[in-house]
Length: 522
Image 1 (cartoon, helix red, strand yellow):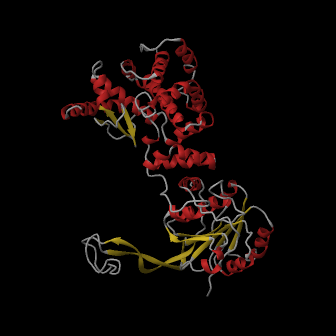
Image 2: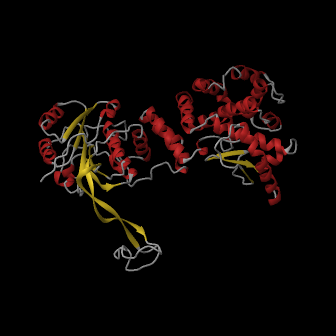
Image 3: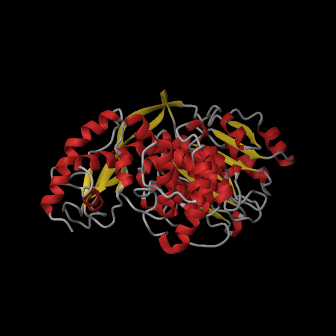
């Protein structure tokens, strides 16, 4: 363990070298790098854009190289990973998706990507940014994978590395050196060729107990280097690969996604129809690629404020809004709860968006969202997102054979994860609505969004209820059948009901939520 003065000297050197590294890499938006003596730090770490250099590695290299060259080279390596490859988590997952059908094992893919992204980033740094990385690799030792990549660097950089020169290495290099590493448009093909050569080396590395080692040339560069927002963006893009591909990917990256805080919290219950966190995550991310419009309606503020939600009371806040019932009769900071008030709404001249009640059919004739892609859950999720983007609340009534207990409800909420958890529940029984159940949803004015295959045993009662509803109704039927035709024919005179058909995800963008005109009882 180095003493504090040594660590301070290295940090001072980083402070002096970093501006020049940033200039050569065209001023990337990265926080100031730091040095660490922790055993948890690889030679170079890049976590949530923070570059951390290992004090132990830096000291070891400084025995043979000028300290400034060591710092400059290590910073080049990390910076190029941020600016060039993988660049973002979306790109990293595309590389993963290219390898998954042929490599299969998630850990093998991650380790292979560590080396591939190292070759791309290091080669860019040496060729385009005049990096001193060749000197660093010349004085580092590693396993067979490391030595093969170092021999590759000797070939493609033209720098002496004292690399291995045996028949197996020469045969592998003959294929590796032909890969166009700096051509981003060919990365998906290049990484497959790269993996076909590296596979026996990586397999041996993992089988020999090196699976817990850092990986890569100077440490791993996987999902851990990205923020929660970047991971969520990458997950949304990968959701287009399909239900099963997404769920497999989530299992491969479960730890990284959980560490980033991007995984839904585990719900209560197990068994058929209870959604797993990977299922919920899939629909949450896939729905983000659809931006359904909600037609505004005339609304106006009435000026009156009413209690809406609680917030902790603090010294300096007025005491007249304290809720004595939830504050245990006390006026203490952190204990007392005060009301946040929201302005009331009524109908008038200004346009606005009301809250929305979503009715979703999860009967046996509908796809189980836990086993395959469900158009109903995707459509309902898109509708929920459309209202919540406009800061409106969403309630959910998930039904199968509701009179026999086959339903789950969520009262009006702004919690997106809670909404999706109820949307993804699957009952798989008969199909009947208990109208008195969802009449109990309490909102001064709301829209209704219903998505079903229309094979509801009491469809006539449902049509009559929706026909008498005072607000706007968006009805979506999944597939084509006689019941859907019946619903269309019996509601075509109702100006407040608009009906859409969804046979595939491509039909969803055509939906305009609450397109009908509301009619209000006098």
